[in-house]
Image: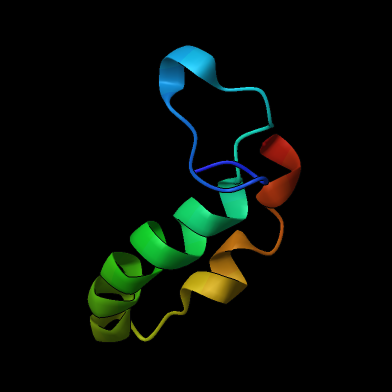
Length: 52
């Protein structure tokens, strides 16, 4: 998934949409696990976006 929508890897022109992958794939799984530890994905990732 790119900022311009889905593009094939071989012909990708737009930048990768990291926010899409974080919110649609990582966050649901992480929140399911973090709820047992009384933590929150959004809080944990607030300082991590600068790494991307």
